[in-house]
Length: 68
Image 1 (tube, one colour):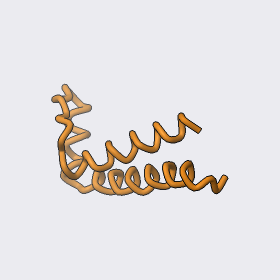
Image 2 (cartoon, helix red, strand yellow; image 1 turned 90 degrees about the vertical axis):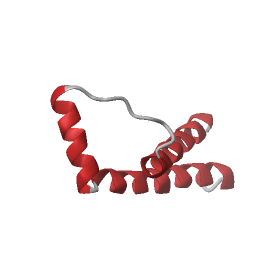
Image 3 (cartoon, rainbow, N blue to C red; image 1 turned 120 degrees about the vertical axis):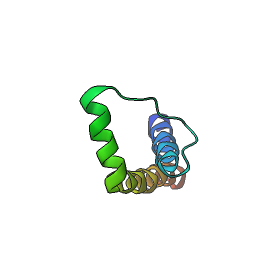
Image 4 (cartoon, rainbow, N blue to C red; image 1 turned 60 degrees about the horizontal axis):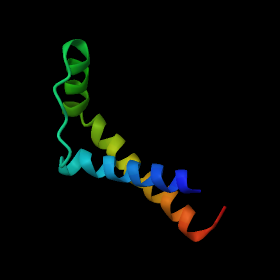
């Protein structure tokens, strides 16, 4: 139960970070940096951010409401 809460909060925070950029991302060398640049410019990371926010909130709400 505690692990689900922590993972849900982490997913939620990292999902919000994709839009607000409060945790700086270091430069990624070589091919990985090129690949991440493509993900950011194509909007793929925004989709992942939305899913992180949704599933993070779902994990926390299931934990708080005792629906399981």
